Length: 180
Image (tube, rainbow, N blue to C red; front, side):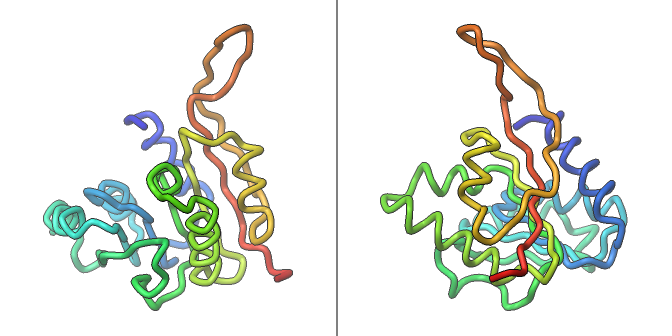
């Protein structure tokens, strides 16, 4: 996604999420860079999850200065039994939803499980920030519509091809729907 999108993600979270004590989860944390940047901004309760044990070990090693603010855990979003037991005020996904739908054989079941796990572990009125390079705004809204409402679309770089213009990535903020 690049540094520009990462900066936009961090800036957007800082603009929208004013409470530094909110419980925040980075889904697919990788090296923990998003968690590190949020810790530098003063956020106090940060969890990074990833299905890769080596990614979690790397994230821990990259975030030793913020160990008192961070928790990293191996977790597979399509295996609910691995998810942390806590609830989160904010969840962030920068490419994990894309990767799951590209790599899993049963894409519909994986998508439904991901969304259900997210819904169950996001607190009432919680926010979900998603950055996707594979799905358009309308596709993401359709995927998440049953359990989330669109709060905001964040502007991202555009490109033109074949006379049509589109975004290179889609960046949306959803709010947990309470009608379910």
